[in-house]
Length: 474
Image (tube, rainbow, N blue to C red; front, top):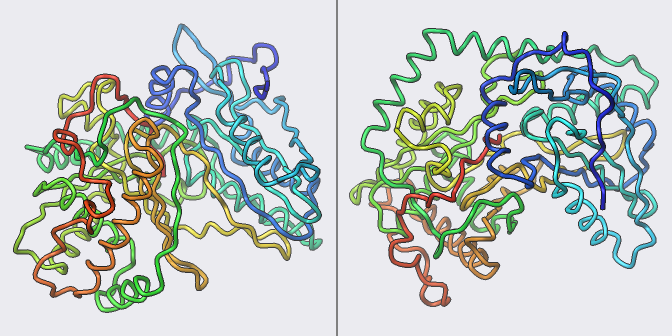
């Protein structure tokens, strides 16, 4: 199925500008990934009356405001550059799947074929949008961006701006002015940081903080190459666990995010026997108002280093986790690739700091007129091991915890067992309250379910040489 759209003739290179540090990291990651595209793919599930043509027009306008929708890459003297080319094909495809025996399954198959199709960074259109019709007033609004164009926060911001334009137009109101900064400004802000005293201070912090860093933890029973098409297991917290989480967060005046991070670190420690756990934390890197309202690729990944003292209480671990999160977020612009380099880790041999916990703190509901759609992320790049997405409950909905796993390391029963054991572990972690003498020290009866702990040597092994750096996502 030929999804890629070849670009028109060579553009005017005089408008080209450099890539940011984050984009250069993605360029490098794509070279290593070969034919596997390092992309963000997502869809908004819509049920209700939608004007598909009006939505396509709103998306085109938002794409022009952000620049991302018309960004292309070129090579000058064998180095990558970028430019905004408004002559690019910006049509939104409409695909009618309503006649399929199972329209939802047909839509999932179509989307997977689209976002897994190989892309040439300098020859193909790096973003696309489609309206998949599943039936009367039933749509999947699909979009795919190569990660070198846009990160997860930027993609959500663009969707929200599109909905703002759509809602104003459909009600006959004036569209509020756009606030996105030109992409050149994003690159300039990155360059200013990289030439500042702030970068040196961040470097000094990470070098000191990561001295003696332990080997990355690994919950898998085997190794395997990174993959862009993870297995996914999604689930809401049981009501009893959600009530315990609400109670503890209220008592500690905190959000669910640091609680779940602390519990997951304790869970990894219980599974591996490690007394110190390092997690990978995707961050937005958007520390200014200018960055927060704009597109571009800014996201990063930083480490969270947590020591699991056998005498610490749950409250102690929560406090340490909150402190670690705060310190990491203050220094989130210092690139993962730079940390690897400072640690002496070869970038083509290291997959990450450890299992990833992604805190999805933004509201992912998209409102279009009287219809409220839910955003679903299909892929956000390469995954080396285990990726935990935490969706705190909004609008009365419960907190969701999704596990994404590298299919080369985990089969479906293994992923299901890990997810179920963590939910059980989280319940026991919360049940004792903050003064519980210590976090649970076992992982919830793995042996009884036949899954077993990680194989000997799998718990804390440095990734093999075929494991490659994963792009940041946030």
